[in-house]
Image 1 (tube, rainbow, N blue to C red):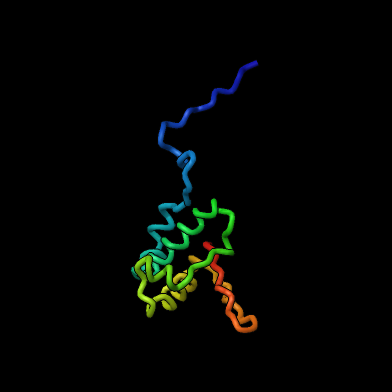
Image 2 (cartoon, one colour):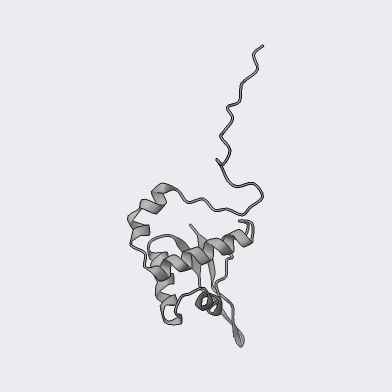
Length: 113
């Protein structure tokens, strides 16, 4: 009986061991939907990908991006809404708008698509 020989991948291939990571294909990065994004939409996408990694990839669809954190991340407050709309219109994210509950508003939730 022959034993299957498993091809060894060279060191450095595949996701990094013990570190959070996110998958971006060349096709995604070369797509018109990515190249058309403005700087603020890209920053928002980066923020959401980092947030996704902070939760070990288990909270997609429940990612939160508070305005004060986005401003600290480098997005002008006046540009946040258009960045969200741009990412959603190109299909990079799905948005579940926050609801008003009593005297407070729940945050919007985001999913990377």
